[in-house]
Amino acid sequence: MGLKCGIVGLPNVGKSTLFNALTNAGAEVGNFPFCTIDDNVGIIAIADERLHKLAELVKPEKITPTFLEMVDIAGLVKGASEGKGRGNAFLASIREVDLILHTVRCFVDDNVMHVEGSTNAMRDIKIIEDELLLKDLETVEKREDRLTSQSKSGDKAMKDKLEVVTNLRKFLEEGNKAINFEVDDQFSEVVREMYLLTAIPVMYVCNVSEEDIADSSGNEEVNKVKEYAKNEGADVIVLSAQIEAEIAELPYDEKKMFLEDLGLQYSGMDRLVKEAYRELGLITYFTQGPTEVRAWTVKKDAKAPQAAGVIHSDFERGFIRAEIAGYDDFLEAGTESALKDAGKMRSEGKDYIVKDGDIILFRFNV
Image 1 (cartoon, rainbow, N blue to C red):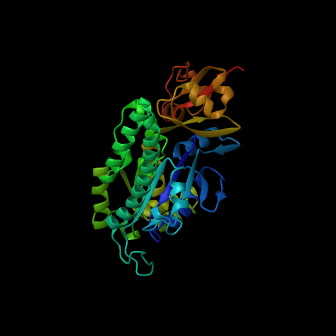
Image 2 (image 1 turned 90 degrees about the vertical axis):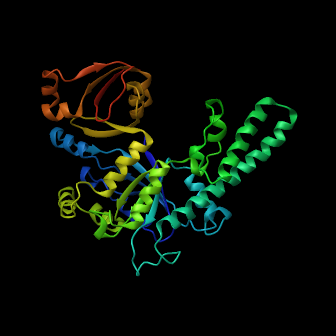
């Protein structure tokens, strides 16, 4: 399982720089170059220090991280919902992502023109979110029109669906986002099948100057975004896309030194991925051996057979049991044999709920 995130924002706010930084991230766990799918989509390796430490102990032939799919959704401008710029094409791209990374310019640079003429984070956010909301309204109104026609037959199910969609349309017209619309479980699919843009979780990415990386408390634009995000129940990541691009090109050891010089423990990319995982309810487990140490992504609260299915459907279909060790226990033991001698490897059945950092060996038979 991988994440699919879409970078959204006005032109010249740092989206492409952020995209380029992300596509070079994770180099410390092996040679995993940026793989282009098309002009604006990339597959990147996710940096995970735990994977790196496991590899130091196991010394495998190969190290494989889990992956993130990133979409650089460029060209969103005022009027995108009406097709201006390349609005329709890019709004369609947003529908396919699991998380929106709304990149906001929070720096002043006379050498980098702002499409609106000045730096104003909240104005920029409103422009983008208004376009997404207008497109959602268009989608909901079309659905409402179809249901109005279908419900004329007297079909109660159609009438019930129409009532839900009508209420949703009114909710959006008041400036609310679809993600905040409350609906009974029996009608949730009615809303979900419209793939509304404002129903997608959002993380705000404040792009600041190098001077503001270590401490952005004095940046008024960042503070405004944080206050807005707090009211929205959304996360905020503060980073410098330009600096992140430079960090991403460094070897693992040099990267750590660079961050220390900036007064940082983790890069913005690492923090972004960590928060994205949390937002989407994802965790990581590991498999290890002399051939390969590998990270895998599963949904939080996934049971052992489901986690096995991420590797191969046969693993889930023929699941027998899972031999599991905690990450910290493995690091303390140093080797798998020492771990077993210490009684820290246990056998779990199909009802075991996988925990973040578990090191797992699956037993199966097909």
